[in-house]
Image (cartoon, rainbow, N blue to C red; front, side, top):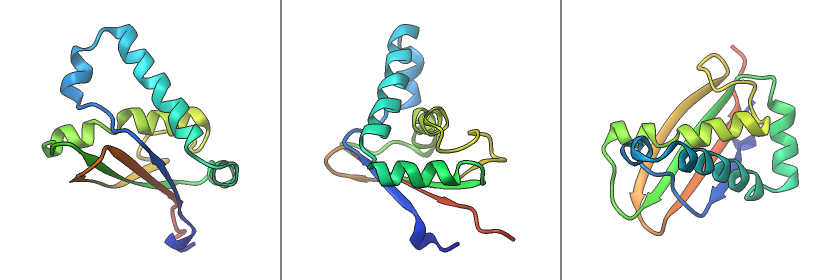
Length: 126
């Protein structure tokens, strides 16, 4: 399959850095995870969600691009995507968020109005 078949979902927010998440009360962190699950699903169309459910039993590739008010260092940038990966698994878009089933291709950032662009596509067969 070609990457042109990818599904892109845009969420009008960015996840907090792991430093902020670690300092959160457990209940606030649970609400954050639930909010991400809901927003990722709500920001996708029915057609996108249906396509991702069809691909769910395949190994998936994911690329995440964030527009933020300020840059995060690489460790925090990669750590910040955990709520997104968990949301994709909980929604049923991928079988598991382990490297066996979900391959994180890239996580990039730029300065701008907060937004997260999530692109998923099935891994091409070898």
